[in-house]
Every structure is written in C-alpha cells, then in structure tokens.
Image 1 (cartoon, rainbow, N blue to C red):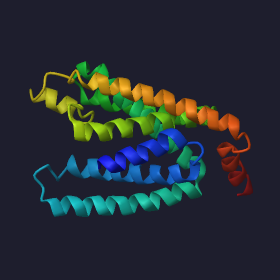
Image 2 (image 1 turned 90 degrees about the vertical axis):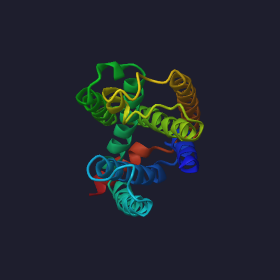
Image 3 (image 1 turned 90 degrees about the horizontal axis):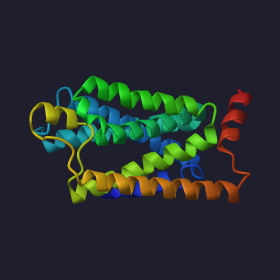
Image 4 (image 1 turned 135 degrees about the vertical axis):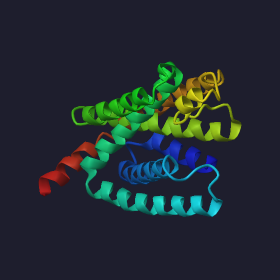
Length: 218
C-alpha cells in the first residue's frame, strides 16, 4: 500500500493535468475501491475478518474501479467533475482532521467533507483548468503523505478519528500529524507550481477543449 500510494500520489500531484486521461482512469479505480472497502468494513466486515475475505473484497473493488475508470475516460466531463470532487474531498478530510474534529460529530464530518467535494466539482465547471491543477495536487499530495504515514506511523486516520474519540480510544489528533500536514501543504504547493509550469510550456494541451469537443461531437 505504501508503494501504491506514494507512486500514484506522485503521478496525480505532479502530472494531473498533463496525464489527464490516465489520471481519470486512476480516479475511477480509487473512487470505486475506496467506496466499496469503506462500505463493506463499515457494515458487515471488521478488522478481525479473515485475510482472504479482505483480499477478495479488494480484488472485486479494483475490478469495479477499472470499469469505472474506463467510464470516466469515455465520459470525460463526468470524470473531471468526480476528479475535482475527489480533490475537494481530500481537502475536507485534511481540514476536519486538523481542526474540526473537535465537533465530535460524524454528521459534521460527512457534511463538511462531501460539501467541499461538491463545491470543488461545481467550480470545475467554471474554472476547469485551475481547479484541475489544484484538485489533483491536493489529491496526489494527500495520497503521498498518507502512504508515508502508513509506514512511519502517528498519522491519525481521518475516517475513524470521531469514532475513536467517542469510544475514548484517543483524546485527539496526534501532534505529529501536523508535521504530516505541513509536508502535505509543501507537496501541494510544489505540485501546483510544476503543473502551472507545464501548462505555460505546453499551451496547446487543453484538457477542457478535449472534453468540450467530445461533448460537441455527440
């Protein structure tokens, strides 16, 4: 998982605009896998589930993600909305984990994170190129740092922090998390800078034009 998150995160963060189509495909895999795994483990699976069951669920999730990834490449305007929304969702995760966890509410968690996702997806309809750069830099940097956190430890899980606080398993965010957050912001800034430089060096590459032309041909 460390290798996957660091590799894919780097690609999305630093080449999200340049490799628009492949990133749409990866977004489909990430969305489907994350959703199915979260759904299964929040309902009838648990951390005590036999390993082979987890691997079967993961394999099926990835296969579903491959199908969704191809769909995103075919319907690029929908894929772009979901990609921008995914970037917004990671922004919501980081902000909630860093500051808003004190609300101690799962409802607040989902309202805030999904709200930022919808906001970024909607903004992509008006400011596509800029939102594409920022959302992919956010998503990629989050994945990269999260991958490091899996190995190095002390990375407070944004999906379970409220439950753990409610069950008195932790008092709050591990202070080291804020060092991860600082690294996240630095990598996000580097991703934006590099992607804007790629945009200025290759002005003929216009992902939005590709989407518009495809919709027009229909």
